Image (cartoon, rainbow, N blue to C red):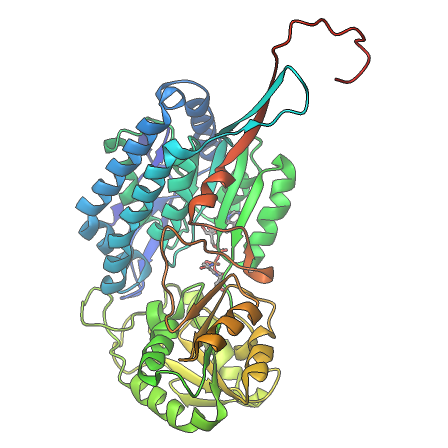
Length: 492
Ligand code: TXE
């Protein structure tokens, strides 16, 4: 009998109102392992109404900021206490390696703790009034019902960067997880009530983008949409937000360059490149999928990179010794085939990988792949594939590296490997990306803003300022003078 995971609406664990279910596959085997509710329009509406009610009346609306902060800290402790269940659910549902989900779930509590600590530091201002007798000050109020739309590639972490600041600021939230990664979010949802977060404050509605995501992002009572996912969905969401004028933050992935200078510590660079593209099977928004290596070290460095890549241990995502797991969906397999397959005709060359491995024979596995892309116009070098595919080429000098790295519509992240401190600073300024890592890659922290430019989206998650995105400013005026205004028609 297939496991069924109900969803969370107004404090109750429920099936969809018409009792329809969606199969969830286990990418490590390709088999169905569980089912999630296919929420209806009515279910989404009930979740939004519950969130709206929880904001306007009841215990959450009356809770002090300090008490909200304490609830978030309790939530962080509960996540730590249930880390192994949460990591295993994420691994089974998304195919992400258990060593990766364990690492990521171990770090999720830090986000709830960080924003728990910030909850009672969200302050308005007393303004230096330019009008005698008139006092002016501001409040930071919760923005309203937040729609948190989460993809499958790192569900619990990408939820934490939305949910933690939203709750810290006193909002109520409706979460729409990806249909390919709902179960870890549903498991996490069980901890919300235990943390003392009242009924209706956190709701989880599952199902496909249409209707669930569409109805949610158009709903008149939604005031903010926090989205991580693909650019086509982002366009739909921005159009939907014309219905409710919700503010929108978008985190959409990229085609991030890694640049290796001849003066770099090449052992560190090698690890950073391998982890940057083959970690999470390349299904990471910050995947370092374009590699530029300085011409004089190119041949040697690429030979070492191929050697290390060919040693990557593919295996079951549940096996702690596996280094690379499967792709998360069958559609992702199709993308891999399309881009790798078209590369030779476009002037590129497969240096290693490019196909399916002999082992494991089951599941949605592909080989870690390196493509040489010296020619212009190779699509695998330009588009986000979201798989373990690295496009490599050379550069001559610093100016050439900057020009090549910046020749993209994306702008999420960039990696620079150099031992020259002045070069590091120059590159940080010259690279057109929201995040630049020097001599490291993929590092994240609750304290550090995260987000991109252009086709990588807009807005920043994490960091102290992100909490203000979940507030609206109310300005208050008090006339404390006893004088009666003589002319009612003159603006004061
Ligand atoms: O994303 P979708 P997909 C990129 C990556 C990948 C591509 C497509 O290149 O190959 O996007 O992935 C919900 N209204 N990234 O198809 O569809 C959906 O149900 C509201 C980058 O999985 O954008 C899911 O919860 N919501 C990335 C979420 O949007 C809608 C992470 C993301 O799914 C909706 C994932 C709608 N109309 C993919 N339609 C990153 N930045 O890390 C779908 N959704």
